[in-house]
Image 1 (cartoon, rainbow, N blue to C red):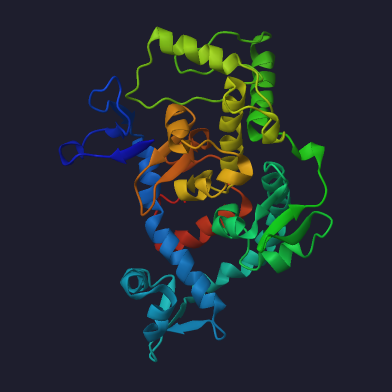
Image 2 (image 1 turned 45 degrees about the horizontal axis):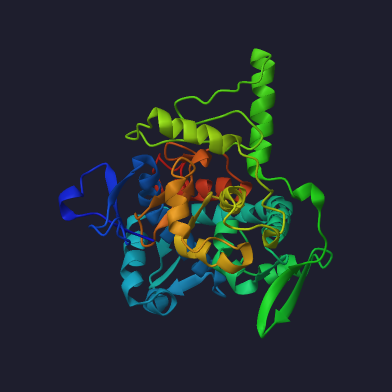
Length: 372
């Protein structure tokens, strides 16, 4: 297992140092360099204030009269966070308005944009149903504890009342059942058409595009680790990483290796099998692909350990595949990014809900909102 840390003398270094917790040959633990990706670190910095703004917006809208007395803010967010929210209220009068009675509410302009949210939620519904089904299909028993879904409901884009507004609305897909005193969301009907991963969809599009352009199917691996094949992942190495020939040859072998679909039951495979280990990478890739911003905290990923049969040394698995995933310690919690989903600090494809949120956050007056 790895413990991520950065010595004080290296705080300005473009690298993150990793201390292994086991000894090699009886000597001192070896140190390995984990290269930073500044653009993805920046995503975490950029989202801090927008996250507070969206949270306060939700709190205000949940109040009966669409306003919140400032003296009651601490009850909603706690003593420490209260001051962060107070700062946001003061800094962005284009979004929040404080009345003479000491209540905060949305400004006139800010109220106009949320009026569009109903239509956005209608557009999101089929996307959410599809992603919830796929989330359950990835698990060994086609069921996931409701508590785990609650843990990532914001990342999936689920509404706060999703248990009533979505799950109850689609009994042909979902059923909530108690197992050993714990509520689980069960998949009622398996849909084979959904058992196609985001990786496979991308791979098919890329192969078709290259065939049209060149009339041939490329078979060699470039220096960036990418390989055109049905079992290949998209790689993006950090700027400071310089793979040698033997490393790239190993990448070629790994990229060519066939592996079972993440949608096949994990109980069928021996985790010691290299193909099964590559399948785990596919499971993590697909889980991140189901989120709106293609990222989750490491704790959120760990919550699905049992249902998805993830490896005991999950962090080590993610670090080893640093061409596919990126771990950042920026922010309150460490987060794992799906690297291919980003161009610099910008998320490449956005669902309707993220586009809507961008429009709301634009009231801040900041131009660099494309990565929210």
